[in-house]
Image (tube, rainbow over all chains, first blue to last red; front, side, top):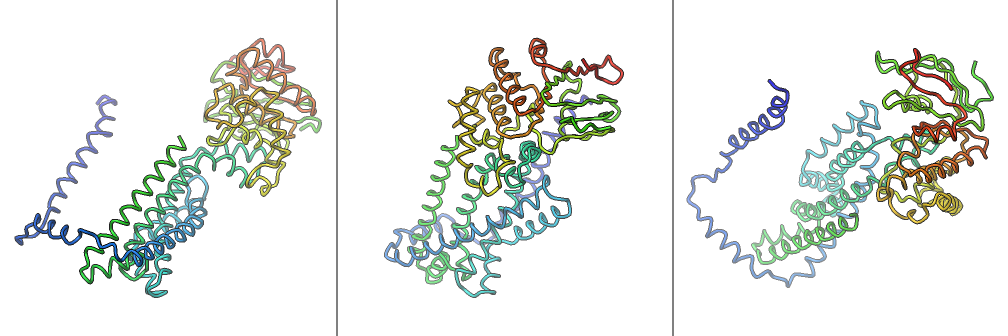
Length: 255
Length: 218
């Protein structure tokens, strides 16, 4: 076969067939059981209970929000500081293979455990306090930031770093002036994304007692106060939009 | 025998990529105030020879003596995007500054020197720009300015003027040579332009496939 068509077959047609087969095989997931449920009526009923939101509980909800943000900020900071050396240790270009493999496996394991499970572990160790939430978010973020940072480092050209090293600069100086300026934008982006993710996550882990907004979500759900529940959801929604705006602004400034 | 008077000295060095021999049995000694030009057609192995000289790649055989620190101007320029031209120039003196002094910013003395050199090379109007915003010629002069920040005596330079117009090329190269000679240093430089070679070279190493060893010394 002409190599041109062989390449096309490998690059386009075979992956397409693979994705097609996977999608077809996944169709049975549209399984809603055989009970006779009126979906439309359910949506309407829920919306009626959600609206209008009950803003009277703003004091306690805002205190939950502050706690959520505090937990996320501390957890993201700790995770960033710990993820940096781990990323270097798991980078293909920096570390020997045995260290790289060890750290990559460690990071995948902690990434495989959902934040809710980390929160359960945290609660069982330190009790139902925000500290449990911090522990959960630190571990969860570490798995992601470690991988993101390592990928960012691996995508870099090491020529400039090696150039400064040959000129007699120390290892830190060579990194600071030979690589950091070109990866810092990506690092900032990852850290901001993680902070946003943690704030959303911190709103959920309260369900298992790890503090923050989730605590109130849990309480309002238990007492069937969907009007208050929707107020909390709205708040989370606005935070997400706020972060998006900050990210966009940040991106535009970089261009 | 490796000579102590030389800034750089090599004895019977060879290099091959697998079975393809680039050069062999090459010996030379670079003394202070010498301007060595390496020339030859494209793809013959000039940059490879420079990389062997800097130690970036290892020679297949032979002995090399090079100073602990030397200054390089690589063909790829060795620029880090995201860094301003000003800081890039200042980074040329990193080997003289302890890491904690360059952690947040460079010392004032270093920045003043960087400004002074950029004025001499006529790039002071762009030093606050990021290096990726500069033109090819401006980048080459930034890299040249950076190379002049250090105190090393041996300068290993790969096509430093390929993107400059003729008058600016001669002017920049003169400045570089005078500064290097002032500190009793020497240059090894890959160059293509024959009129520039005749004006500057004290020694010329021509890489050619016509010679058995891959080189001729002029």
